[in-house]
Length: 148
Image (tube, rainbow, N blue to C red; front, side, top):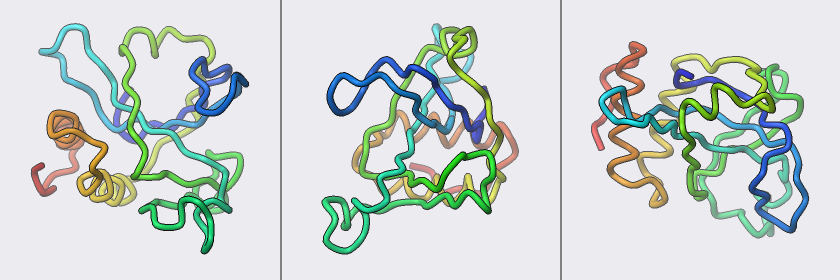
């Protein structure tokens, strides 16, 4: 799975609130590289809880990237990537063989650059993860990025 891949994980097994197992949308940011065995993929999730980010919402101060369905049609509704949330990581082989994962599209290079700038300033991404993402983006031709 390459950086910028958007996928829907049906029956996502790790609910954030309560016990409800439901689909979640994810974006692949990069991986640990082939020299790391096993390879882990760094992914971030989005949310459709838009009201939380409005004035007076519980996450109004969070830095975000907004995906509008009309500009990013691979998403089924408008959603937000919250840079003040921890990323997930999964084994590459487990992601690729998971029948609950539907690849829905890919982000363009400019969007990936913007997301990289957001995660670079996030306190929730370790220097190691940031370096993995930087290296992964370089591998797909996105160069000139500030190093973590």
